[in-house]
Length: 140
Image (cartoon, rainbow, N blue to C red; front, side):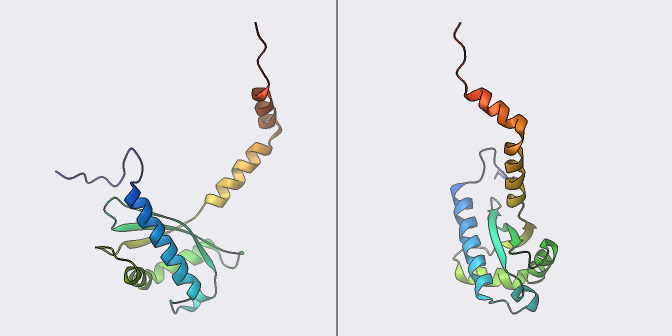
């Protein structure tokens, strides 16, 4: 019986990572060239941060963020979701996969998590703990 889980305890396989990166690059190029003829997409610059692919490579979750505050994240995701079929068609035309993956768009919160980590490291209490850990322990 085949394993039907969509996740693995070890994390994504090399194939999932490779296919995800190929989809990310292809989508980025398609969006940069403005190949989708939708004024909502052409009026905004969108970055594709990451693409995670299901085990069977049939679903690709695309993490996106509009650049330079030109549009809200919700507006960008709505525009991409509206044109998901066209984007899927163009991605499959440029890649050689058995099945063209369904594209699902989600907000990329990497930058928010990075900002939160910077804020935590700037906290005086955390700085004190880091400095105390770096001091050599007294010998007994």
